[in-house]
Length: 392
Ligand code: ATP
Ligand code: MG
Image 1 (cartoon, protein in one colour):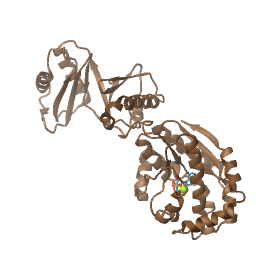
Image 2: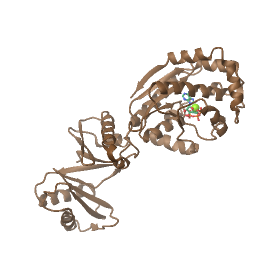
Image 3: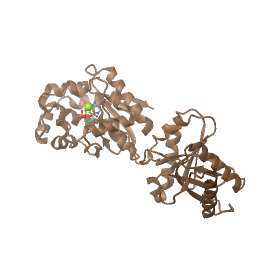
Image 4: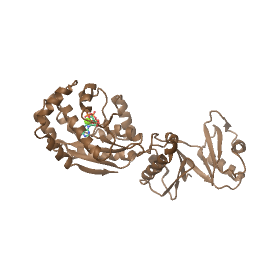
């Protein structure tokens, strides 16, 4: 029955003179999301609204599913259009609409008319009253409730008349791309994809870097990260994934540094390399899946040591989340099943039995000096052999 959707957006409506930038970004993201759907769609902006109109047959559920992934959308309203053929015809159209959508009509309603086209002969109050009356006559089981109705029946009079009453919640947030770009440290675990999702939701475009350590980590572990990036891209748009070969750096640290400090020192090199790529690709911050106290390398003291090597801000959106809360988001965004596939990640091979939980930055720095001889060259090689995979 529906051939179009009215897209409502909340937060971005508040952006004053920058508003059109946000709207354009939202239109762009909607176009991107609908590319994956069958059918052709016309997306238009008009008077603080965005409309998606199908120009061919399309799969309603598929389109709604896609739109639910576009950050910036607060709700998705399937609409029908009526030509202006007089008020009688409009009443008939609305009554048929209600009959189709609500087979059980024991409910309360309120007509909420908006007359954008001021040449329409009835003003919005008159539409509300007269249409309400016609509905009550057709469906005596329905009742008016102007304060807390079960349904708001929206009638918008424009060049055509738009009718809708169903609002499907969107994901909220801000359109991706309006908030700059961040570099996500993406491992194959549960946490980092969720961290990427949360920052993308605030309008940030996501690039990603994955450190792999062949042959200690397998091709399948890498594929899993690519798959996670692909799931993220459903929300965040195309993800530029940098795959860095970390093996020689890891082995070198393993050879030269105390084993209980391995994780921290490795994390510091990951951050350094990620920051290097971030700066070259105009990312404005790093993003990790760290959560306070989750493991030894995520205590406040450990985070001092990890953070110290970065000059860009490090966004840790999961910092106050319990594991269970992270898992809930992972399930909602569909990364969980992929994240728990049992392929080793590069940290599990080199973990110490008793990693430090309160590393001293001075001690860590001193031990990193053991690496002086070759580390610059190894980092350079790792950066030079960066494999870029564009995932969408
Ligand atoms: P995750 O579930 O995201 O793997 P984790 O609980 O396993 O997190 P750590 O292994 O301590 O935690 O990693 C902390 C963060 O460091 C990760 O959330 C991720 O952002 C980053 N990270 C860890 N390993 C890698 C890797 N191999 N490649 C890229 N980033 C990584
Ligand atoms: Mg991990």
